[in-house]
Image 1 (tube, helix red, strand yellow):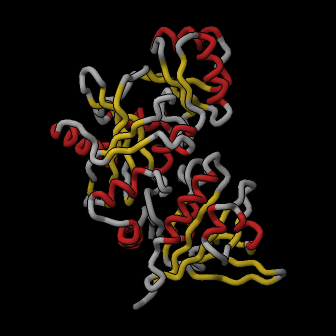
Image 2 (cartoon, one colour):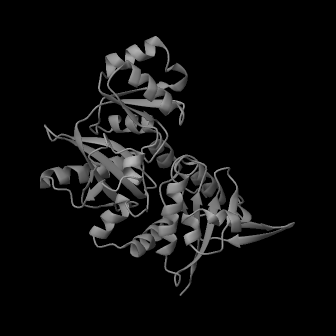
Length: 358
């Protein structure tokens, strides 16, 4: 068998660094060593790149940084590889495909995808455009509005304007209470809060401003949280729908409820009417195509508890692979275990040009 050399990028400088370490541990542990030469490449919170060669468990617990060797991914299309640096010597390690496991900024937003385009190395997941517009909730909403996809009423502001009286009045007039506040560029429910009055609104805007210069404000939707997984390039497959059940003491599915509260649960398939499930699956495919998605995405919706109206929430182009992550669980329910799912994601990366020119 002709083995492929796969560089798995993990860590990164975003607020989701720790989640990435867990996802990477899962992915590497489920990669077939008979099919792939695996090169783990970690990026520290400070942005330093290190090739790691050691027990995979040390990735999850953070000890990998102690044993890493300096490295960089060369943008030189003639090299197509990782440059390993030992003392005053450098060695090129050719790479067939890169699997970015970098959640959030500087990994899920088109930046690493742009570097890989320059290097002409195939990579798992969406291209530069889909990654950047999907990471930015404002632009996702603009695109989905144009595509006729139902979503909650929203507005957005710059962080520099959040304490202006006109800004606060506009939000209250256009959205009203209760409302949700989100950084435009952040994942894993980081920086999200709910507000029911002016004081909570200002506090929530300041919290979101810690993570991004653009802030999205949405109307409150009393809805069930539903998700489905997408896989493919031109031929798009969509799983059944899963439901997130937040812990009783969690007002919504924030970072703590997602990763730290054992009472939060997922239900696959979601107990919803068949016609609603088909509507969600059809909308998921429509959203994926609207942003020019490819390879992988998880797409999230609400179903209003009273009207049962389906409302698009957000799109995640590099979903987690942790023990509680919905994306791999949805595919396992569909009969595609993690090892085979990873194989397919790598094949999808190799079978398309990722937007590479020439």
